[in-house]
Amino acid sequence: MSQKVITIGSSIGAVFPKALVDELEFIPGQEISVSAEGPDRIVIERKRRTNPSTAQSANLVKWAAAYVEKYRKDFEALADK
Image (tube, rainbow, N blue to C red):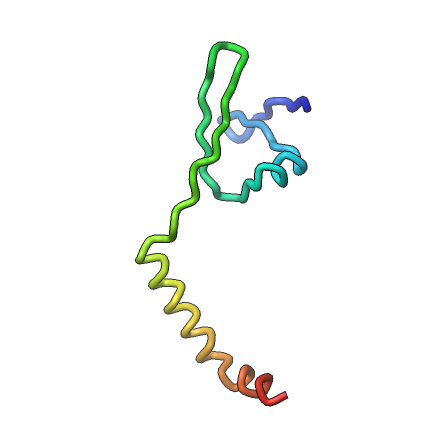
């Protein structure tokens, strides 16, 4: 597959086709490593996914608890059906 290098603000980049994104299971925001092996070869490696930090987990728990409390009556009504 062939892609063109495009201008993105004052930088340049290339867009990954959807088929490749799906095959490699890339997700938005995921970090990748890009390196050159000579003038005509670029290597792109997906960085390993890491577990969320303790701070991120704590924030998620706070958000979920607030969400459940906000909609508690609705959840209870659904549970009775």
